[in-house]
Image 1 (cartoon, rainbow, N blue to C red):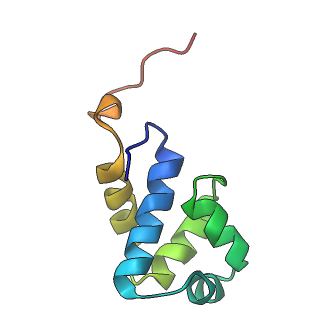
Image 2: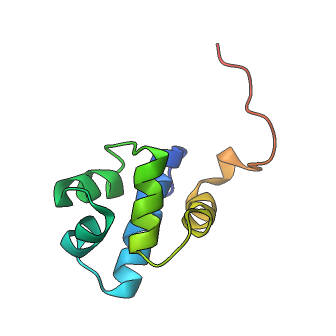
Length: 92
């Protein structure tokens, strides 16, 4: 799976990897998280940027805390975004 410099894409990958690790379908995660199954698909593909509350509900549906999910997403980001504890460069 190619890496992405976009943290939104990394979050989607983390959700999909955890869901597949648990053997869950998008429908089951969506039901537990209180969102539409299509929304899970859009998040996993990086097409939607969910609110923190939604991320928290998805993480809980996957048996994790939001911090655990964020850690996996951080690990999936590319080297050009690291280190993540340094400030971002100024925008043009």
